[in-house]
Length: 82
Image (tube, rainbow, N blue to C red; front, side, top):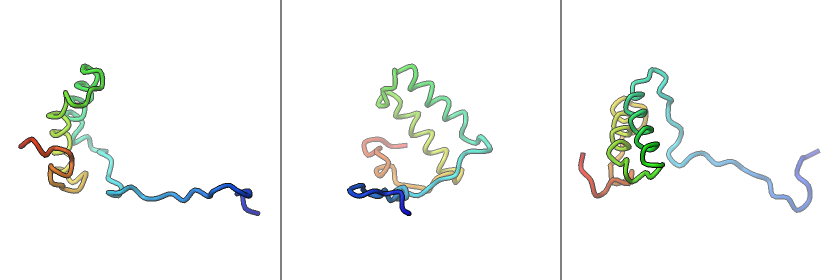
């Protein structure tokens, strides 16, 4: 017997747009991540004040093969250079 009753829609999960990515088990980017998190806390979670730290964190993840390399413009950094 199915758990869906009449009139209910069945939820079908979809995978993330960019797929899954490995966790940083070895802590390769931990210092950079902590700087980013500290910046967010100090700026009361106003992300725009922490763009440099966010970019540094993403750069670390890409450099250590913890995420696929992407163009900065695709990650929301069109107006900035590294």
